[in-house]
Image 1 (tube, rainbow, N blue to C red):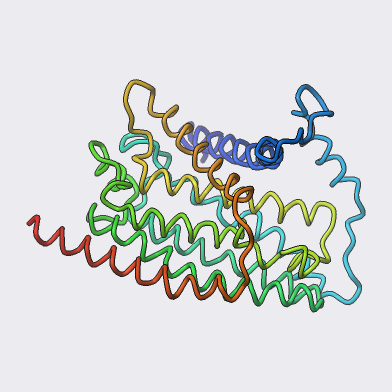
Image 2 (image 1 turned 135 degrees about the vertical axis):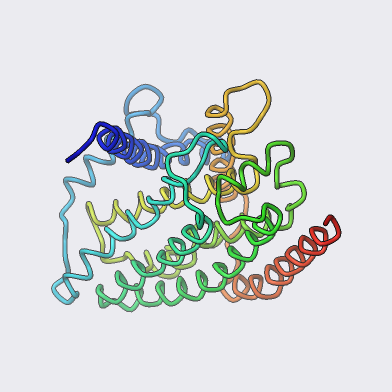
Length: 319
């Protein structure tokens, strides 16, 4: 029998899902406007006041496009890959706390859950490329596999310093440990590494080689159109929101801050991280793919290990 408590939790989950999807959809408009501002042009400004209804126009366009499935594809995997890409990271929002006392769900292995869900990101790409039976799609998947496997290692290592400092895998305990000092100060090397790894796993510029238009036409989703393509598109923005929320939780003290309410602090920090993700696209050139892989193993790996060893050494001395 469904109780009132279960009903309230269900309503919270539905509202959270709607907020995430709507925010991810509008991030495409925000990104285009920010990039236009940096590049001294207008951006989308025709549909609705200040172009705010551009997302609605794009949604109508996607829904009306032909939802084509190639005859030479594996139809089952071809259809399921964009769905996995859209939903795999959403559960992480359930365990992200705003403060040590404001959270939806308490999980003692929250950090491990985030790492596990990040690892799933590669599967929809592999499924989409293999099911498409297209050489460009397969090349994009090969790049994505090598890139995600490389940077996912440093994503985990960069968090370990925070885990050692807070002595817990629970995100609520990690947030509580930052009540007086945010982790970005003692764990600055870990923060830099985590941010770079997040860019790579979300395939954000300059780590967008798996879908680079100049070389691979559109990479692993070259055969997708209509609603299926929009699921990949919005899924990338959901991943960016999730990574930004984890940065805020692990390194920026979550909702802790002076004067303003905790929820407002959390939203402001989240917006700052997302804007940083977007502005990097407007600021940096795309390096060669072999340079990306070399950077991960020759720069990120030593920084991650040094940060972890220094954190462990300081924690031992403080006992």
